[in-house]
Image 1: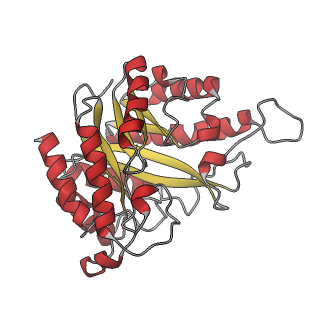
Image 2: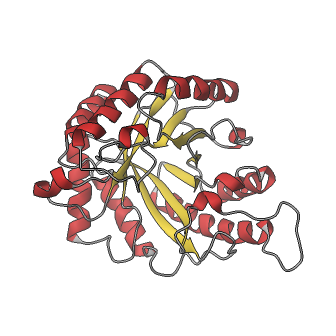
Length: 315
């Protein structure tokens, strides 16, 4: 199952998915505002489960702070009630704050050391749990992983995981590789759609799209950006993946990044859309928008342009 010629005008909702922040009036209003402000036709419902460190091998997804299954069911139903197609996106993170791209183990098993086999066993249980929910709730897409850069080289384990997921989920499958990694994944053929994180500097979009295009042509698969966005902060358009960058609130900077990203992608028919990053379950007020320097576009210049662009692509 694939996207064919469908355009994804999507926004990521709910991250990081802390228990108790979904399935309430604030979260309901947030998703309604996302739909209204962006004219999205898709949403990626994203949340985290936490392993203790990058070398831990247990992912206790059933524990707080991860959102409960009830909250996940609620978010999917809410998205569908707004006419949105849904990609369910469970993400593993490290409780100690280390970025998940650094989850890593020895390539050869060593006694008394944590092993890839142990981690993938736990990760498979984690992913299958939510793949089953995605199937039961009719999610149109399921994302099997996000920016797990050091694991990308473990081709056999990923292929085995995908095979297991297909036993419980019949929709469209993708993996969200990290920026600059599109040509490092050797198992795209096992999935339905290629997707990646589009945090490329505003001046570098043409070069990066040239590089990604070669991957898309070689694999002959649909492609979209599962993440893409920029903080509304001075300096962020040049390094949009750095959420720690110091700078003043600057919604014009965010708007400029989106202009560059959309302009570059417009000429590439193979770019079938975006799942923009991101929209929290608990929104700031409109009065606070000008001082908010995060990725969310609510009440900022970029929101109007996104709505216009998505409308032009999906109507």
